[in-house]
Image 1 (cartoon, rainbow, N blue to C red):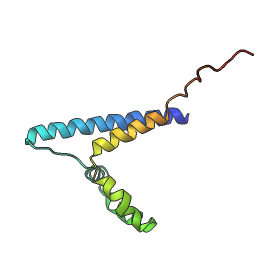
Image 2 (image 1 turned 180 degrees about the vertical axis):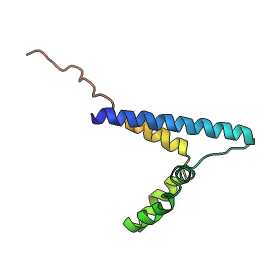
Image 3 (image 1 turned 90 degrees about the horizontal axis):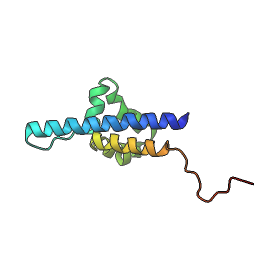
Image 4 (image 1 turned 60 degrees about the vertical axis):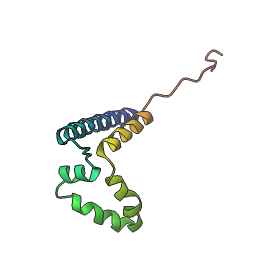
Length: 106
């Protein structure tokens, strides 16, 4: 069940990353310059009211965590984060390999 959930979420993240990549590409072509949507822009667009509380809650948990991990992650392109997270989740949910040379008969 967890493998199915991991693969399902992986495919959703992969599809979202691809959509973000196509959106950035179309916007870049229309503007004649490279335009990339960062993860913070996506978070502010989707979660308008709750986005401001993210920094306060992370800094309340561990002040160093915001500067070292979360801030650089939110400045990364949303398409790369979606594609990378989707690939990792699909990799974690893959079925196990059958061992080669394993004798099944007694």
